[in-house]
Image (cartoon, rainbow, N blue to C red; front, top):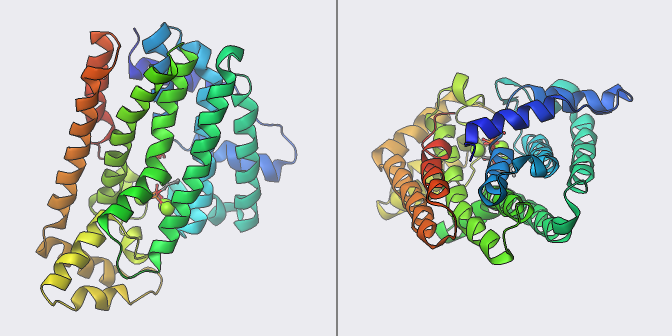
Length: 324
Ligand code: IPE
Ligand code: IPE
Ligand code: MG
Ligand code: MG
Ligand code: MG
């Protein structure tokens, strides 16, 4: 059985052999640019790994892996518009570099190409694969709407937050594994087992994304640090700080939250101070670790080889305890 890094290389090679039509250049070049500026390629790697676990034939799932990576990149292009983000993967975002209309339309065509590649998946699993993909795409949109709605609210519960990040982030990682398993010949039930495992990891992955948005190093993360603070995103850190400040009759947090100008170094520093005062980083790290453990607890119930279980057990490190 080949490991995640080997499968990522296989995916990278496959992806580099694909291209969009040349014309109209204004439509396609931004997508070529966006796919070339990097990305961890986690979802396609996980998809291939799941297929490899059941069949040792990860190559069968390459087109579905492209579909999932295209969908992910489409969602990032539109996410950067919604989040008003100017940097991703260390480079300018699409709307910054090419304009808003391009971000909309190049994103749209990338989504459409995702379906073109998905439809090339092996015939025998195409219907269930299609159903998982579509259900997931709908959930991601729902999660993104919740994310935006929560920006406007003063307080959001931890349960609401967890539901939101499951939808916007976790389901796609989980679906990648479910789709790979289905193409590899797993039963529906077995594929759902992998889905449930990756769903827990995906929640931990987004909590880590929230942590890195505050404490990551910009060169490694490739995004503007503090972007979530500026937009009053209801991250786990924000929610916890709001709770702790309320319990202590501390108005300082609300004061900064009510300030909604564009980037302010002062606001980021002040909010990070409040986070420090209430130990919210440690709180977020604890919940993140709990979610990784939840994922690990699912592994013994899966009907896969010990070698595969070991590989999955190590994924937590790779996906969650990351600095990039
Ligand atoms: C970013 O995903 C969006 C989230 C769901 C947190 P990744 O961190 O996987 O982004 P890339 O593809 O590696 O740039
Ligand atoms: C992104 O969440 C989720 C999706 C793109 C669906 P974030 O907004 O936190 O992702 P980053 O931090 O911009 O990568
Ligand atoms: Mg964003
Ligand atoms: Mg977002
Ligand atoms: Mg983020």
